[in-house]
Length: 361
Ligand code: F6R
Image 1 (cartoon, rainbow, N blue to C red):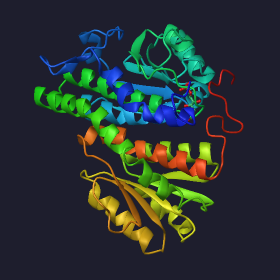
Image 2 (image 1 turned 180 degrees about the horizontal axis):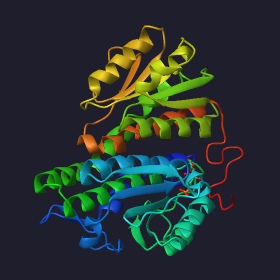
Image 3 (image 1 turned 90 degrees about the horizontal axis):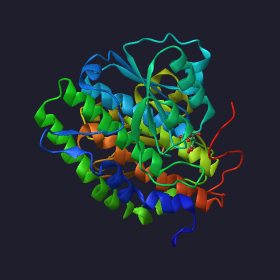
Image 4 (image 1 turned 30 degrees about the vertical axis):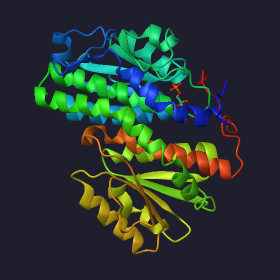
């Protein structure tokens, strides 16, 4: 049942305010400025002993894990990174007892992620899951974890589950942070930010007509570049994946800082750039990247907290706490991918050659 929407993708994008509300519900503890994650199975002593966090997933879940790693580093000050589960599995990984491994999956059935979990467990590691489907294979194999509570996702391309997974990582990062050195004041600040998300997502969804009109101006592109820096880079990667999956327009994501090291050669009027430009301490650096692109006659669509003069178009999104901004900045680009695909007449809910859950190697 699409509930009045023409596609599941549109329905699922639209459901995000309620979905985010669900992942937060019952977990916030205002008294101690922290969150409780019932199924984590990680006591305070264990949480203090973690030296590294390694996040494993595929596709969109891997991108959510990249944002998660950034949040864990920022809020809990534990070195963290994300890696595609299959890459990890095939390189005979060194498994370290002081590393917390986190497997991320919407379906909970992705073979490469499941196989990585099994390999880690064979080697004696502690593995948590950040999973959407309750009781799925990865949820059962892991030692504990955080359910994402996005609700069923039918469209092959993931949207609401991506957003909820990133919020779930925000909760995990806050939880680990408060057990370690994150101050009460910072805990409060993040909690207030989390609480604002559903209303801010609603605000973004209200600009759909504007995003649709913009998307229709980019349908001629053969290829698009997506750029971002630090917090913005995984947002760019996910937005690039979304566009290519549903519209079949080639898209490539790069850290903005890498432009000079190669991709600037591609810039010309027929190669538009989508730039993630949060209003944080890297704003000036990002603006400089826009200038370099403009100087080479590149067309720019910015996703930012304020209008960017160097950009041809800016989608303005509401500001949250710096650490949580990536959650919001991806949402207009889901709509951008959707409306590009719609204008091109694509089979949005079932893109060619893709399956919802990849249970083979
Ligand atoms: C992209 C997409 C895929 C999945 C990937 C992992 O929109 O849906 O890239 O994210 O196949 O699937 P899960 O999260 O079920 O493990």
